Length: 176
Image (cartoon, rainbow, N blue to C red):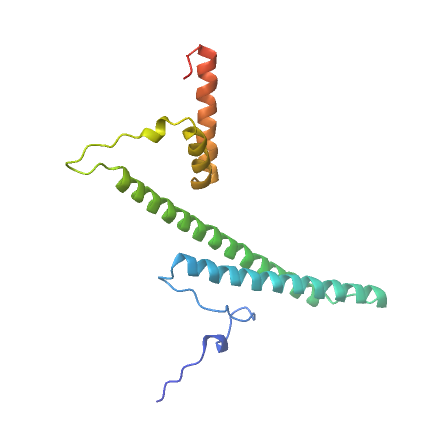
């Protein structure tokens, strides 16, 4: 008995559509998963657009000839459209989850790097920060926060700062 192997592309598919360009891997790195999912998204979107174009052409031709489209054809096209739309939704959900993993990883790397940088070394005194007293420090701090923080986190910090300033102005706290 001889075993033969076939490329993935030649394997039969369940729903009649061609198999995906590459099979998902269990330990696939997030950036490669995102690239694969993006390619799949493009492929499915293109197939859905082509199906809609073909349907529109067929519908116009049937109207011009005053011939009804068979119910079986309508059912087939609607089922295929639903399949493609469901696959598109699944891919978009996976892309969102992958993006979330990538963002969490980036945030974790930044957090661990900042913890390592901010932790004082044993046997050394903490250095004074003369630049923090500089007049332009607030402007550069604002720019750095805007560039480095995710938009939602930056917006939250900005909202808290506005709230604190409003409270200080209402209560008459002396501002520096």
